[in-house]
Image 1 (tube, rainbow, N blue to C red):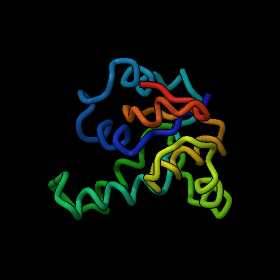
Image 2 (image 1 turned 90 degrees about the horizontal axis):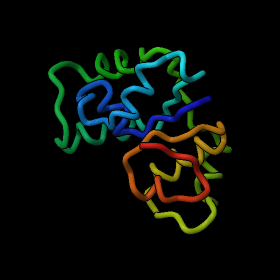
Image 3 (image 1 turned 60 degrees about the vertical axis):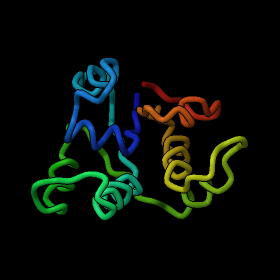
Image 4 (image 1 turned 90 degrees about the vertical axis):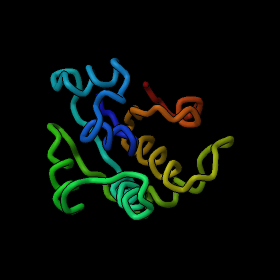
Length: 132
């Protein structure tokens, strides 16, 4: 089983795990319960935009935080490929217009992964598997 971390799930796991649902926290903690955790390249960009806009703060260099946060067990970084970029623009309707969410969903579909997210718009999207 593969799980794709939504941006907030990845950030919370590394900054505020108490914000995660019990189900998601237990799932991530139990490394024997999954084959891989995936993280889309767009999530790193979203994290950097949150820093830029002052919506979150960290006490050390962003490059160090990112490098450390990418060291989660069984985590695989998924690059934004041309195929994923294209597929994010042709998702079955209805889906909202946030480009980062579109890329996350397209990545999950391409990887046959379940998205770990609190985002109601993704949770309600019938074409992608998701949990919270």
